[in-house]
Length: 242
Length: 169
Image 1 (cartoon, rainbow over the protein chains, first blue to last red):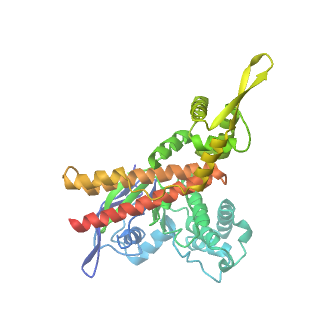
Image 2: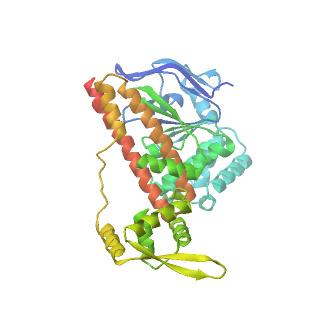
Image 3: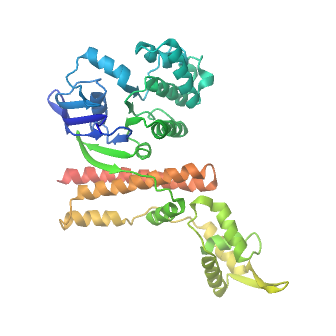
């Protein structure tokens, strides 16, 4: 099957410094991938290139089989609208629009009828447990709730891929856990493809695959799985800690 | 297992089966599966050491039930256990020994060892998180949180190992 994201020799220089070099990654439809590494390792640069927020110096990017690395800003804007959802550390909600309007706006911009945008928005806010706040201003919500609004906004156009840059970086640990559970649910229940950048190991451990970056390159990758049998897990972990 | 049994007996005499049930109830999901044999073996050793004693309680038509109780010596031992701080920093780490020797004896790439270890810790963290989700807000969840924090520290320490080794190359 065609991967949702494929890069070949992807590289980015800033003033002659290699921020990213020779990245070859392949992300399958429905995969949940975390990208980790120390600050400055290039993980956010990679995410920005994948989402067209920044342009590569060299290399190729394919999005669902289409070469997009040479796209103009105008074409990227269309791709971002329909195929890519973004979630950021600081939510980036529009302060003077209601929660409902924040979520519906990208849908309307992408050509949804107002009826369809409203129906999708209600669905998403219900699923994320914030339906009661639809008419509130984002500023009146807690950080965890604002991030849920941002997730709803990112999903309204049913993007091929959700790109999340430190989505829990500005949240307390309980809200962080809730947000991760919601991302996990979007993945498990709807097969949402997710690429998530984080420096937090506990957050990364929720993904199916973890790419560890070092000095602008992918140094190592780990596949994670749920092993199900809790008592076996507990016995093994206790041994590990002993 | 010695001290948990002494501690449970401090609140009153009990037979082995009750002790097992109490341990399971208190520690729930984070207790590795217990079998009755382990409990009775430990009780036997405690009795040999004079820390517990038993009374036979007659039962209608069935063999006598052995009810265990704490002795004075057992109470002293328990008091010492409670008063002592648990040993804390671990200056023993099998992985570290492997890492140092892999580099010194040139038998493996230290960075590859670190990467593999990081993968194992991430998988363990994933599983702990699953256990935490199932443990909910129980006492068990608190232990799981502690283990997760230790694993996060282990992962940070691997980063440090990597930086130092990287600088030496």
